[in-house]
Image 1: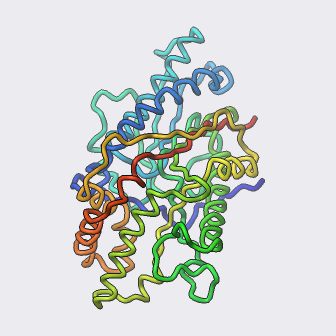
Image 2 (image 1 turned 45 degrees about the horizontal axis):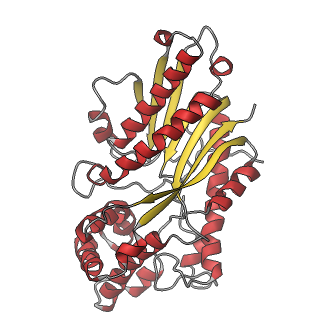
Image 3 (image 1 turned 90 degrees about the vertical axis):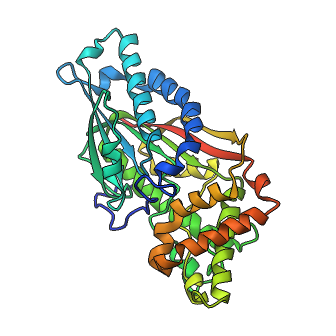
Length: 360
């Protein structure tokens, strides 16, 4: 097992900040139900696995929490409040005085994300001190042994970079004409994504191992796939890729630019993620499970296209030019409206929940 002391030079690409309909704020409401669903998992993990007496000395009652990556309001604050309430309940169950507790919460996201929106939205009645920490979590962010609890929700699936092989025309993994791997893609393309994800997870876990106190906990949620394929994500990327190719055929963008563009995201299988944690060696797995979340209401084509725009705009804009964005996602919306198979691929969502403890 190795550790990565240096901060990474890259940034995980954020979704659009601010308050607009295509912003992270305007597109986070669909996650509210998932926050509620996972609340009990956090509560149970803290109640059963957090050793307050080992973590905090009698003279120090400051409990430090880090919320990592892809900040969303208000689900971000809801998750933080859940963690704090769980820690206070743990204190009470151990017959300790919660009035002595002070909570410091560090909100992390990339340097290009909109921290002003975050800070302007902080709850007035919050029971913690708040601080922003800009930078990529693919590397160090905090001093050694300075955190007691880390929460990372729907962020670790974003890769630090596109696998180089899939945009290299001389590579057997070249993903020509597509922006993501498909169900019938050669194994070499999926292997390239898996390899990049494995590198990123190793760096992430090694950095967090340095920053967590021994016995500290880390809760991670991320989308998962079956046999390496996430049908919903693949389908949505295919709609965007198809719209880009249409624009290339019309001469609005170059096909060569499409061939050189891929989406840097990977949804692992549970077994794949478990193996990477074991290989890292710094953490014990206290709980690991797959959650299946049925969708009772499929979003409209317009809502889906806005979410895709929020997620992909800062990837697509620098590569193709921001002037194509509106036309591109109008085309995506039209393709979504014409699709007959969309509801099947989006009917349910699979996610991984893992609770890790820093080994003493």
